[in-house]
Picture 1 (tube, rainbow, N blue to C red):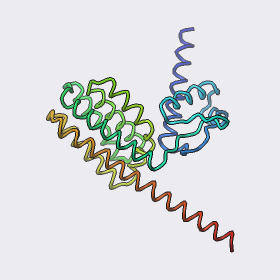
Picture 2 (picture 1 turned 120 degrees about the vertical axis):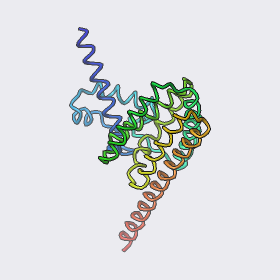
Picture 3 (picture 1 turned 30 degrees about the vertical axis):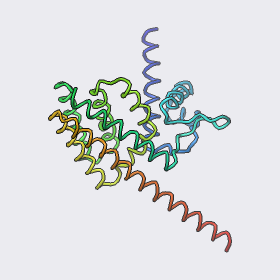
Picture 4 (picture 1 turned 90 degrees about the horizontal axis):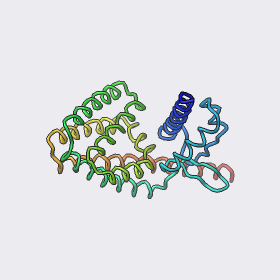
Length: 236
């Protein structure tokens, strides 16, 4: 019975993580409906773990539960995106400053190891692996701040823009810049320089915001052009 319970828990967690990855990596597009039957078939599970995963994703802010429509992958307006990134910049800046003041040698060593792995993923241009390691680094810095309220706020707010942070590294030049900033973070932490760390973290997030805004504006322009062309074609 214990093994059955454990296996069930593992299945539910694996289903949640897989569905989360599909949302973050854009394989389920923003605004799309999450069809329980189709997801259950594609992931080879029953609908029960799918339902639980959707509930957890809704609590994390990656999914919206809408009356008469069901579960929809969250789609933020451009204004929402800008506001959310601005909040994250302040949270990560504060978190980085506290981490620089409080971080242990053991956590620094763990961060160095993750940085090494992340650089290897970058060298392979393995964006999925890079992003997962990147996320672990940001969470570890946040934990090193030793402020549980700040950690909860960061997790809740960051979930809204995880898919956008993932996409921000798809530009090669911007990705390289992000990698350089991560090395700067590690150097500031080693120096226990809180003010420098706050500045680096905030600039890092603001750079992400600018890349994402440019990307979304470009997509909006393309859609508007396609809509205009479609309208003209109908008229002619």
